[in-house]
Image (cartoon, rainbow, N blue to C red; front, side, top):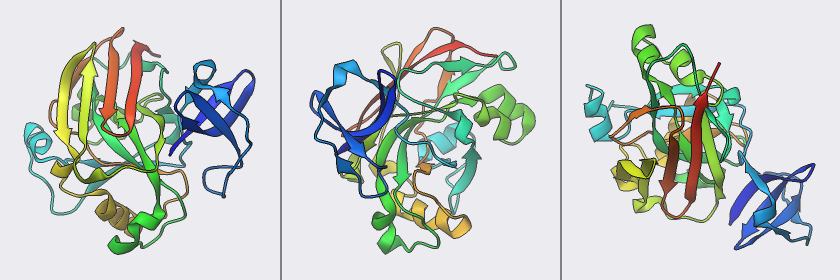
Length: 253
């Protein structure tokens, strides 16, 4: 099932997407939502970020080839960092290019959406806490990351975490293609089978550190091939079986 947040006229609602229609839901994704029975043409709505997380927990160096291109190896346990909720934008929203940066990179990722409060989750139980999956883009001001020696500013700008286009609740993650295209050119291409730490392991690890709330997102790491974008570029992140998340780069503040 594809779950989305959308704007229809002056209304913002949640809904289930089925082919060419959206069925609005009463309540949130996390509280036994009930279909209203209404059908809204998908062409008449604007999709928004599918969730508004309290936090985005991102994972670094979770693909071997990307770890190597960053000059390191895959760590013994997940390396995690936070992106603020204010960095989240939805499909079609502009990615602002900050005036303080001279090098902004794309980072295509599979995102895990948490469906219920999670604390000290065991690996074998991790699936019970996952609502579904999204495409994500861990946009990074690479020059500021190198200058600061830590990642908060470089990855925390408003608009630096596109998510979408919806939450897919039924997908087998064993071996899905993850790609990034810039102006139609493929920049990143890998498969989820190459993840050093899979979704279940990440839910177990992150929930041992901090409580995860419904709607929180774990970004599982980016493949090799990260590279710069420029104002006017169209960036597409595609995860097989989920969809395509597209955003354009725009001048920022």
